[in-house]
Image (cartoon, rainbow, N blue to C red; front, side, top):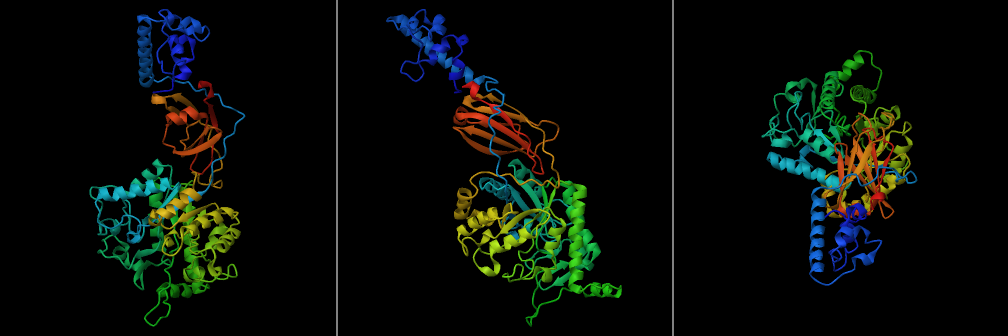
Length: 565
């Protein structure tokens, strides 16, 4: 039943005023005077006018009073009062600024690491697993999912350029039956929950060693075999082949144009990680014909610099094309966590610059990306690959102030690391100037109850907005419109709409109860939000802001609900 007290205080409601004075006592009826009901509006001023009397009249009017109370309660539930709270803002009160932090997770589809759990599941099972991923992300208060859509020149979406992935059905090229589009579903479910969806591509890998099904006729290994090189147990597009680069660019841009993604993401695989031959020697990537052709044409670069040049050209071109097509879509890269050994001095390990031909520092310094997510997959303490030492180094290279959102190896919990390690890495990231978030590898690891509990209770107690990207768009949305109406069963419905024609990406709804503010982040698709009966009773101020796709937050509209109480 909706709250009665505020409406019963009006004298114009007659007998209802008198009933108000008895709520909470044993006598729930009106005072038992035969003349009391018509005069009950005056009872609060002249209480002796309604003094109880003996006889049947008292019983009769107690029954009438109780009946009136029941009728009013039913009417109030079925025909809620409108516009009780006042929209006049309390200009002396400023709600706290919402937290800003990127909280992401990689959802790997390659070899069925995260989704689907195995090939050949029914469409219903695949959808159920995918929805569980987004429900879990929401419960953990994450705000971004990085969803792998092209693990090996294949597709987890409807494509005219590449075949359906074998990790869906078990057979490359076989569409889901009954048909659905996994990427479209993932975007819809993410946005429904106010979560960003970044499409994750591997630009050059053709086939994993574990690939089992026959390649489809339109897979590059068959349709464009001249671009493909065999390296150890893998097959790879040759980055020195201009047509191969153009094909990968076309695949990525096709997704950018046709799907409402929030980000385009590529990982650390450019040239393959080095493999050894039977004698234990590192194998060269088999690009000899193109290398000789380059030298014959007068090329002066070393072979390593020549390879790096191809990767640099790909990264720069992709960044330029993304910004030409959809400027607000973020472009991110997650390179290997060590740029070069000795940077800083104590660091040892694989040389991504020399072995993967990935000059991630150059991309960062030239601003060819919107965020960098170095994979700092080591613990805090060991000095040779110390998490905070590497984190500080990457921050020091970020002269253009792009987003630094660190990759964390949550998959090490619990077999190799305690959950405390990941929690402390998040805390260290927050302490590092220039860093503003974390991305966990991978989603399956976040199913671990102890890790999930530690994250939610110790570092992600409150929701957070993705940090703004002012170099893409620095203009805040117009102040939104909002009001609050009493609703059925004592609820309070907050109704909101944009201040102009720009549809918000998110709504930020803040409510004050007992002097404390609570923040909720809602999808921009929402048009209203209900506060439960207890929440509504205690809430005295409501604040609403709108956020756009680049993280700009509008001025706040404040609703003062105290006048209704």
